Length: 101
Image (cartoon, rainbow, N blue to C red; front, side, top):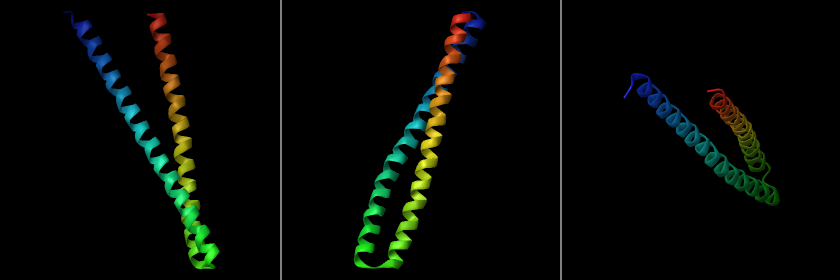
């Protein structure tokens, strides 16, 4: 087996491992966002209960936690959109490379 072929195979293995790490990371973020959405819904319910009971201190505290969590969720969702765009760009570059070679 030629040295060039060995180097190329190693590069392809590295590319596959990189794609796998990328997908795993994206899946972890998606799982976090799903769990955070469930928590946000629970905060919303608790804030509603506190408001109904007239406990303004708890309502404000829980409401601030809810808003902070919603902000965090939005940040991670924007990051996921960026990751999707990067993945599309990577695929586009790979297709162009294959076309030119």
